[in-house]
Amino acid sequence: MFFEAFHDGEGCKSYIVGCEGSRAAVVIDPALDLVDRYIGELNRQGMRLRYIIDTHTHADHFSGAHALREEFGAPIVMHRFSPSPWVTLHVEDGHSLPPGTLRLGILHTPGHTRDSIAVHVEDRVFTGDTLLIGGTGRSDLPSGDPDQLFDSLFAKLLALPDETLVFPAHDYKGRESTTLGDERRSNPRLAKTERGEFVALMNNLNLSAPTHLTEALRTNMSGGKTVRQLLAEAGAHIPFMAMDQLRHRLAARANDFIVLDVRERDAFAAGHIPGAVHLPRGQLELRVNEVLPDPSVEILTICEFGKISTLAAATLQELGFQRTAALDGGMSGWRESGGEIE
Ligand SMILES: [Fe+2]
Image (tube, rainbow, N blue to C red):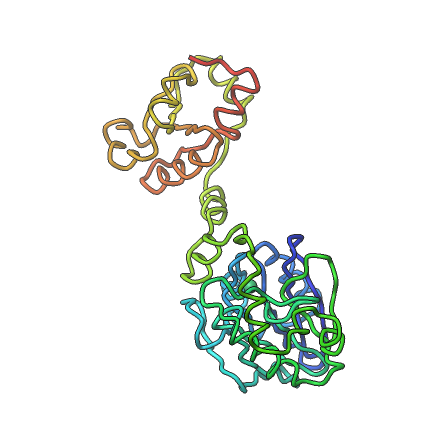
C-alpha cells in the first residue's frame, strides 16, 4: 500500500493512500493550500486519483476537494449528512470503496460533527477529528454532540483491534500516528469510560472558536470561495504595475493613462496620487460609463493595499476595459516609498 502524510503547517493533516499494483489512489482530508503538492506527488508516483474523501465538514481549514476534482475528475466522497454541494458520492456506515485491490471501510463516527466518518484500510484507520493523538475532536461546533462522540469512540473506533494505527486529521505537536491500544491506555478523554462523565468533560472544555470558523464553514458547507481564492482568481487575469513604473509614467506627464483611485471618499480626500480620478469600488459598475467614457483608455486602479484594486481591475476587464492594470502595493506602498501625494 502506498502511503504519504502531508502537513499544512497549522496542524492539519492529510493523506494519500494508494494501491501499489493498480496505481489507484485516494486523498483524505485535502487542504486547499496543498493541492499543488498532492498533484505533484500523484504525478511523481504515476498514480491516478480515484476518490477524494473529506472525513467531515471542516470548520478550521479550507477543503481542497473541489480543486482536486477539477484537476482529476474523481468523485468527492462524504457522509450522507454532509451539506456540501460538491459531494458526488455520499457514503454511509458499512460502505466500502475499492481503489484497486484496497478496500476502504467507512465507519460513521458522528460527535465532532454529524457527518464525521472514519476510513479503515488494512492496518490503519483515518479518524478525522473524532479521535486525535492524546485527545478527541471538540463537540461544541455546529452539529457536534458529545453523546454521539462517546458512542463513536467507544463503540465504533475502539471496537477495532488495539494494534490498529491511527492517523488523525489534526495534530498540533507534529506527531505522525498512534495506535488504538496506546490511546485506550493514555488518552485522557478515553479514560472517561462512563458516558455521563465523558459528556460533562466535553461540555466544559470552554474552547475558543477556530481562527477561520466562519469562512471555513461558509466555503466548506456551501461550496463558495475563500476571499484568498477570489483575490487570486482576479489577480490571475490582470497585469500589475510596479511603483517605479508608475513614478516613471507620472514624471513623463504624457497624460496617456488614467489613475483610478477606488477607495472611499474620505481616504481619497486625505491624499491621493496627483491627477487621480476617483471612483469608489462600491459605485464602480453604476458610474463606470460616466467616469470612464473611453473603453480603449489605459487604466491603473489603486486602493489602499492593492487588494480591492485587483478586484476593481478584474471587474473593469469584465466590463470591457481591456487595458486595465492594478498598482502593486497600493497607496500604503506608494506612501512608504515616498511617492508624491496630492
Ligand atoms: Fe474538524
